[in-house]
Amino acid sequence: MPSRLLYLVRHGEQDRPEEEADTGLSERGRRQATLLGARLRGTRFAAVHHGPARRAAETAALVAASLPDVPVREDGRAGDHMPHDTDPAGLPESYAAFLAGFSERERRDGPRVTAEAVARFAAAPAEGDVRELVVTHNFLVAWLVLHAVDAPARRWIGLNQQNCGLTVIRYSSGGPPALIAFNDVAHLPPELRATGLPGDYRI
Image (cartoon, one colour):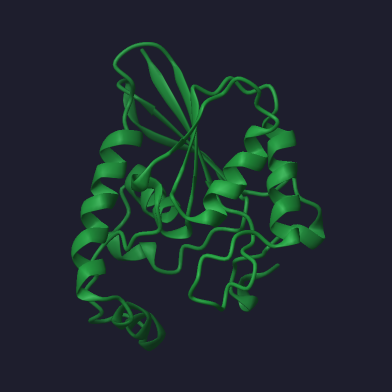
């Protein structure tokens, strides 16, 4: 039975993340991406896909430097989108405030693009085994994890990824998706871990 091994990575640490602009990677983010590339060296990927944001493109380029002959492709479906227009009723106040910050357009377009990403990446291939790497953002990784384990849609909020953490999901026609790895940062030294997480999530 053909299978797809989907490697999902949140981009490296962003430079000046408090700014609205997409400022690219910090020095720490570049080190994270380079170390991830070293870990993945030798993996036979069909392609590396990345969202259009500068921080995702830079991460993909640094990882791909360790993956000679693997094509690198920009894909808008791997961008930074609100995956689900979640009803804030019954959620903690901080979550409700977070949801209120999205525009009507983001509420409309985000779930549509996310559904397109699921259709493209979250399925068994028609034939042959495939490995693909997607360098994306926190929300899409969370959504694909929820999709794989059939969890409630609202749980995408608060399911946070570390920068350059590695999540792997296997898709096969022989059964449901299998979550093989989640937020794995074994390739990063302690000083490069836990970036991108809320302060009280760090262990």
